[in-house]
Image (cartoon, rainbow, N blue to C red; front, side, top):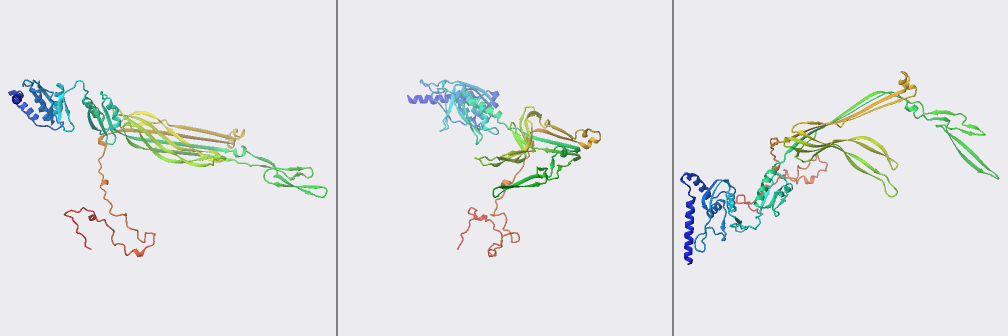
Length: 538
């Protein structure tokens, strides 16, 4: 009985193969196209290669799966639960559906997956044997998760996480970043994997760069004028003294028999006024003087003019949406003094302040070739000194003049925008005169002084953003990595007795080699049959 079943099975397989071959034979009018398609199916293609045309007309399902699996280079076997083309209990072959397809520009693996999905079949590959098993799909089973490693070329893995998570509908799907290699480990279903690859193709693009050229023009004008006669030194604080000096005296008491005698000696210090009066001698000294500071006047008839212009031209290249900072200047030392107390000793500490021109800019490229700039220029200069006292000691504190601008502008690429407004104009006028005498026409010029000063400063900022294109880069070959290894331990030989400050050691002069030492490369060369070194006989 077993022999009869086996014979029926073999006969059934032969008949099925003949029927399949008969059904795959095209009509006479389509012989060339069918021949090309058949030749393509019989020759395995490389993985991922697109097949121009796949045509099957009334081909049994198992035969179609076998042809596509061979074309995809897939080793497979049918699950015994699939009864297509298998002999039944009565020895008859189970009926199987016929496949009629016509696909263009598709890979063999894609065609095989589409065919299996259409008939509720799936292939499960064994990772050890690398043999796939074609079996029936479980309606209650969740979609199979696949793992792929995606290499990023431009984007950061951490920046892509949020975008990748938005493409997942299955809660089991996830993506893991690898910062070191700029790769993403994606665990998702097949439909989700296709969406992830589509997003990566759109988002993983080169980030544009912007060349930012800035010019900061700083101007300072300080004209002054002083005309007239200034009597401030004479009439503002005139000290008047009467006398002939400052009197001071010493008293001496002498004790005698029965009485005490007191004698007083007066001394006069010339300089400031002062007189003494006694009932016995009258005024001491007898002659008095009226003293004053004297007459002091300042004649001025002078104009001064000072103008300062500072031009700073920083340039930098930065990525889109990345902040660039340019800062040029000096660090000014500031001495911070701490007064001493009963319990804490005083001291000083030095800190530094930036006297710089600072430009902070963040570009953002828009779709219409415009560049939005968030600009923050800042200029800090040293001002006047302010005198102060700390713990009873004089201390000098410096003022700092700061000008800063924070704004956001939109500029076409390659165009210049002028930003100003940081202008300051300080006008000061002063007059001094002697009352009444300074108001006399003509003659009053001798008793009046007029001063006028002006300090005008302005800061103008010119900005020119330019989007960097691929043709703006210049290829440059560097030979630095091919620099030969030095063969000596020093850059040059020891200095001669004419240049060196060390005493000449004549005892070692005879032992020095006549030639500079050289590195013997043959000593470290590998020993082969062609460059074998003979042993040294001693």
